[in-house]
Image 1 (cartoon, rainbow over the protein chains, first blue to last red):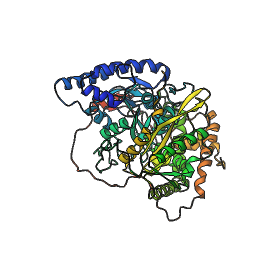
Image 2: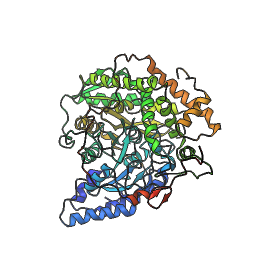
Image 3: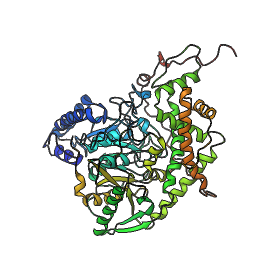
Image 4: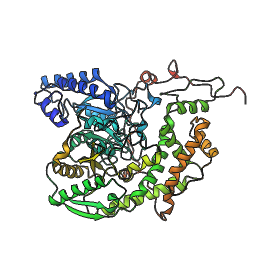
Length: 490
Length: 102
């Protein structure tokens, strides 16, 4: 079981059954991650010493006859915008280059308590703003299927780590598709739970009404296992839901009888790559042949989502990122004689933030400024309610809504120089966050492009708090696509 | 892009000032064009009828939840100061805030 393709559940089972020691699993994974990282740049930091210490603690617990937890020995790759006491938490930004969190995020605490091992921190688009993981202060992340292509973003490092088997499972964050789009482009499972289901305590805030932490995994079962460990109310996040978490593993293997799959015509647009549409149609055919009902639904505001997302997310980001001022932590520009405090803030932020982050802060500042607030931000919030209502109506006639996670497979690095073109990649994922509902992308096959085999993900969405049912539906799709379980050659 | 929002260089510089971002002057034209491109796309919103619709600030429904006012442990000050760019004793050091004369 050393350098193999093993998922989190298999590792957990083997460690708990004493077939292998957690320390052996972790040492093997560190070696594999280090060697692949030279090519893929998925990790900013591999926490070798701490990981080995945690693994020994798990082995000691087992030797002493204590329960090592439901994720015993599973190495976790953590997106570097999630606070960990060990190592740094940089958000792939010069602004936080030397920042060390004095606390663990709630999800990290819970995973540690479940026996999981924090393996390292993964690269992202700076402050989670991007769809290609090219806007990373520590270099671009590479797609494991073709290193001349992007892995998607912003959780690109975590998606690569999960897809290339450089961890048992990875954690990401999703504000407009940042878990699901890279999962689709790299060929792994990416799950964004319902807003409020997973505590955001310790997630560096980008768009507070949109952000949600979730797993990137090699299988739906692993995603469900991880979610089960991190979900649930947290006193330190007042937006975590006080609603009991339904165990997603209990009925995961039982297909939902008479599953109704809603398909909006808007999702199979002619603007998509035709090979992507063909794979989505074929997945729907398989579901139908296995007892599901395909229900046509309407979501006419689909393409308006990008417009309101690029008002709401930058508005929230401009407020959230105001805290990076060079005073309490993070980068501070060298003081110049006679400089005012305002000038110090401005030079600190001008130096510390990359170009894309600066663009979004300015966009947010603009739409919130006097004279424009009502026309942009106020109006966007009203359209947000209309989009939520459109989903509510669609879910009256279906259990899940299906479509592509991304309009195209992985594109070439450097291929999108216009920020707006990059923003449009998220057309099928942003509305999930806008409405606060759960969404998952899982591999359904690959397309050929210039000699490369590029994975394609099916995107499923469900009503708020129907996370367990969504995972069950995703497991059905996964079981109907055994050929999609291929792995990249490293 | 349906319409280009008439954003001037002067307005772009003003937004950068409001955002406390030092932007070199030679970057302003490209920033202006990129922001105008996004704002032009966003202008689609104007065509949507939102009469009588209440704004939705969050998908979360359990708002105004209050916790019991009980003291609990807090983070260690020396650990917090470890991340500060400049300290004096147990305090954050900052440049002089008040001018010498008014």
